Amino acid sequence: MGERERVGTITRGQARRYAATLVLALLITVVVTACDDEVEPRGPSGPGVTGRAVLVDDTGLPPRPDGGGSVLLVPEALLGNLWSEVGLTEPDDLAHVGFSADPEVLIGLGAQVVPVDRDGHFSLTRTGPHLLCRLPEPATSGSSVGRVRGCDHVDLPVSGALRVTWGEGGLSASLR
Image 1 (cartoon, one colour):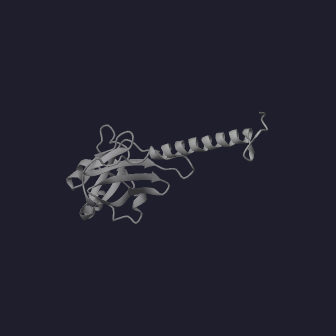
Image 2 (spheres, one colour; image 1 turned 45 degrees about the vertical axis):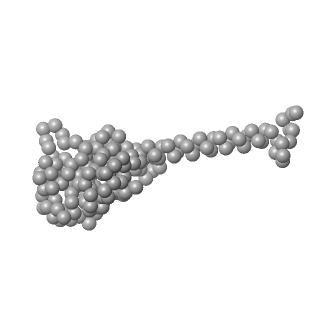
Image 3 (tube, helix red, strand yellow; image 1 turned 135 degrees about the vertical axis):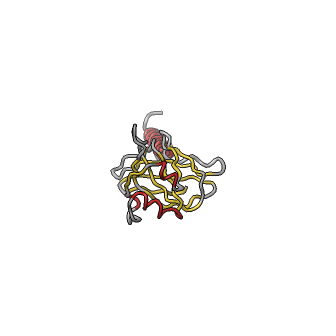
């Protein structure tokens, strides 16, 4: 019963190496899948949209949560008011748009400012077509003005999950 004893058409040593390789491949698959799931939004548990803000990297680094700050929701019917308030005409490149605004003033215009927790999670209760923008930093001490980093159009369902990503391509919002 030596190492060279045949089991079928392969040796026991070869069978052990194949088994070890299979186990290693399975472990890598589980780890990669688990890492990708780390940045997915939670599934909805009722009415409303659960969301997750995520930073993506085009150099091969894994996605990671984009926590803190807030998400700005502006009903599409009120976009003219938003652009007037921030002194812009509707930008051609919403994904990379940046502007400063006082969240309280935007709320007065009909917008909603929703906090994003440190893991990137947030919950939305509005439905229908909106402009979604990311305010990554909370207002600084002594100032209520926040800085928007990218926007995207989204049609919010009654219930669902939303992933908001920021990276080289700008901001993108996609329903899951």
